[in-house]
Length: 394
Image (cartoon, rainbow, N blue to C red; front, side, top):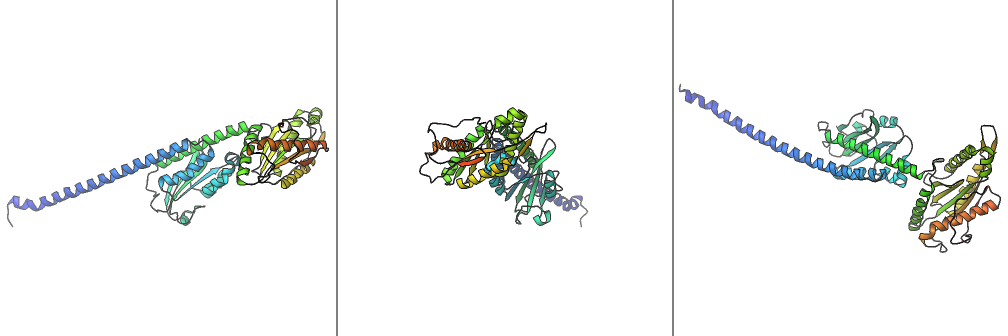
């Protein structure tokens, strides 16, 4: 081997060139990976913002939940989305109405207490990602093919109001090593939207509820009657209507005081709720009068319900602070719309017609001695131009 130093240095110079080339390739690969990650992040950010705008534009709690359950999966190619909400005051049936069951079928789970949610998700105090089989994770309400999921607690003012679960068949979709910033922001925005819509629903409910009895008010009744008649007409099922009057209400007020009169009205509302379905509409029509709409209920069944209401009410005894007691009785007029009935007028006049029949039947119950229910007949209207108004029968 030569002693020439240039000859000896050559073998050690070549590996140095090779290392720089490899380093360059590694950096280039890393750069492309970062660019790809940035592009995917930008795409995810745009998808989040698009979904956020849809949620922020929701005009009701039902619309908000519907968008959340359907569009979240569509935006992010998820296989399952479930929303758990705590309804400690049992208000969601009022807030969501006939949309409650379809939403539950789509992934809404309504729980009564925080303890129920904690039992289902005992360790969920912060957002978490899990990539494991569901039988290992122990998640309820999820099919076997979901292999990874994100669990996002929904909090407002430090309190847990619910939880959002996102599921994917891809076991690597929600890897615990992934970042949580966007998901945490998404959860905060959802919680804010839910809280805002619940507040709006509460305000709407206040504007449509009778403050004394918490029954629906006349404004809501008028709207509900038009909608239920249209639905009954389209779907070809009956709709029954009751007008109910508390007998001798003026005497109760004059003899036992207006406070007892108010208590009597509250008690009547309670009795009515025990006799009809949750989906039926109970409204304070005015003064001592109430109205009930019973969708899908034929007139024969409606009359039986009215008679049961009269029977249950007559068993009720009220007592004032002086120990004076008195019983309550009701008079009820029942009418019904049947789509096949050729004697009925066109749909646009059905609300007035239905109430006129029930109003005349109520008059007949009063004339017959009170404490009873009377079924209207199609020919019992006193005047085709007459519209029932609130009255005091005494």
